[in-house]
Amino acid sequence: MGAPCPWLRAPVLLASLLVAQPVAAAQPDSQQPSLPAPGVQLAQVPLASLPLAPPPLGLPQLQQQVSCPALQQRLASVIGSEFRVWSVTVADADGRLLADVNGLVPRIPASNQKLISTAYALDQLGPDHRLRSQLWRLGDGSFRLTGEGDPDLALPQLQRFAKLALGSGGSSGTPGTVVRLQIAEEPKAAWWPAGWDPDDRYYAYGAPVTRLAVTSNAIHDAVMNPPSRLSALLQRSATQQGGKVQVSLVSARQPLPADAVLLHEEPSASMHSLLSLANTESHNFTAEVLMRQAADSWDLGVVRQRTMLWLSEQGLPMQGVRVADGSGLDRANRVTSRLLAALLLRMDHHPYSRNYLASMAVSGRRGTLRNLYKGSSLEGRFFGKTGTIRGVRSISGVLESPDGLRYVSAISNGAYDPNSTIGSVLRASQAGGLCP
Image 1 (tube, rainbow, N blue to C red):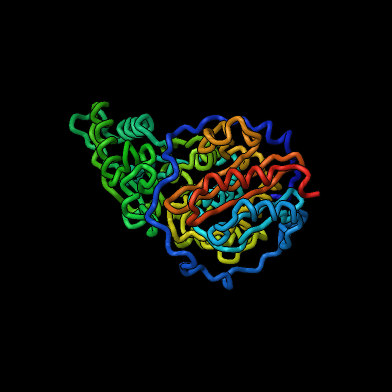
Image 2 (cartoon, rainbow, N blue to C red):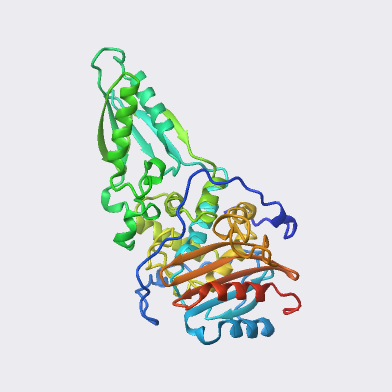
């Protein structure tokens, strides 16, 4: 990680965040089966195996004691009798814990999980990173197509790959020539995190996570066999160009031969667009790919361990935290509102803080928050991430208030009317003069 770098605070920072729209369509937050009974918790990753990393030097740390009784009382009043199913944490830019209700209770975060995977990816890969899809020529005259999960891989790129393979096939132009092309892909058992509900896997938002994913492995619904679809599209592209390809499947975990030569590379959109797609539009596929790239592995067990280690290295409160996937579809994820508030505080002092905050939805204006809080004091002043699966509603982000920035995280597991409560939490957190 680079040296800590102070950045300008709001309103200058927040007013500058005008971002391009993501380049791929995304599904809204998904639905899931019913919530486990209150108090039931899944086994969690033991933290004893993680090193006790000191907090980053020179950065504000989230305090452990509540320091604003007035806001604490307001939030307690807002939550009322549903105290048991809510976790809410509010902090300021100095790291003061202004208010905290069950902030250390682990809960299912839904798509608030994407705040973790995108922060990890931005820190590890940087704002200029692009995912690559590459065509290689092997020593035996065949070709291999490799990828890193570009969510916007589409027919134009495939047509270029087919044309280059046909034109570089040695005896191209000879009638009846067949070009041999390998697709390097993950095994089918790794296409979905094990904790994704089987029913979700048929929808676009639950599409399989593969390295070579044409239109994110979704049309109207999920594409259940991505290599088969990719093979058919490549063969069709070759036929349209007067040639023929013979496509086979190889393991992406099989190293390239030493004599492989890179012929062509198709880069993805910039990290800025990828982050926005994951956070603003809550695109599950992109969030999963970014976490795998950040961990430099497509073995999800390894990815989980490295993500947990990175979180620990940030000096964040890790009690009860469990990373199961990058998107939040897996109900085995466990986070706390205090962890997410501390992460938002940490990332707002990160060298790439502008990129992270610019990837968020904006209340009343953009992304999954575009239709919320219009015409209210919250419009255009909350930059955050929503989360919705059955029985779970969450929202976390950075809120502008008359007294400065507020880092807010609210997670409900089983609330009756969570949307109304979240609005009240945000309005109470925005009120001026409560926390001198």
